[in-house]
Length: 316
Image (cartoon, helix red, strand yellow):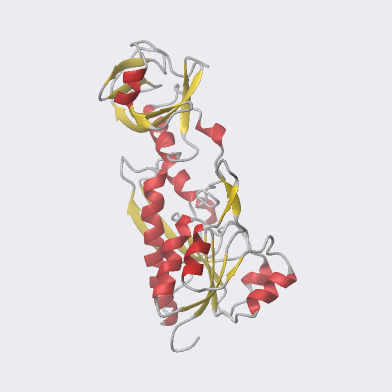
């Protein structure tokens, strides 16, 4: 390390990693290279699109590496040539091999979107909401060969509000992660960071999401369905069926409303939303996305669809 801060290699790919990279670029530390995933084909035209991190790095004039695999001697050698003091990782998308973890003198640290040891894995923000956590945050972690199992260096927590979705928390935690990262680097320089081993007995997993996990089981409580809808917003989205067609649901509100109706039954539908019976209590759905249509308010949906009291969601 020079008097101008650390020489850093940054490894990250999606939007979540962008604030951390931007914070490092604006700091007195030197980002000597950025490693990100290869460009991917997106949209109907299947045109190649660069990862968000690549766009930011190139605009800042930083060399970008996009290896198809990082588990080769060639990749390790190419990173070693930059002589990094430290490697910073934020949602890179691949597990780092020991050869890279051991490369910089200070090792590798990770910006993780949960309060470890809860929610280790690829989708920590979404699972925090799905599991109904009242508190979440970010963890700056010293990386090891496990999946988010390394020592905790610093953590920053926030409350999860009733209206929060995975999408809204994604933005909040990305910014919080950038702040926590700079804080951790300052403390690291002053030798004020004390690595704390995780309590592995408290660990939970946050595996990747898939579209089918979004199918709503109306026999579950309104609270659980409320968390599922919010945790899968904006992707892959929670859904149900109406008249044999799939419809995605958003913006739920729990109503402590007792009902003897079969779970999934529409109790009421008006401009304030669609109230649906659940296994316990009920939900008001305020936004929907019919199959082949754009996301819309429940009021807009009802303008084009007849939905009588007693209609049943979930019948496909």
